[in-house]
Image (tube, rainbow, N blue to C red):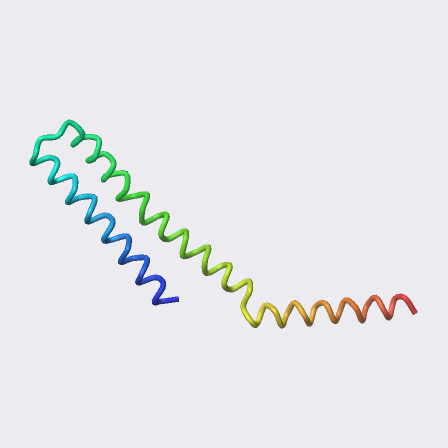
Length: 90
């Protein structure tokens, strides 16, 4: 899990850095789209880390739901329910 977090953090940093460099270059060149790209960079500064965090959080939840421990607990619960049904049916 730590490796996944590091990879997603690195991807986020690279994406933000590239966005800032791109905006700076266009500002120096004098493009009409500079202000729009600056606003995009500001929004991405907040949205991108939140999205990366939520993806890693969802991955963690899904991974824990299907872990070996969860499978064993589910099997035990099914066996207990079957035994209850058998004992109630007799």
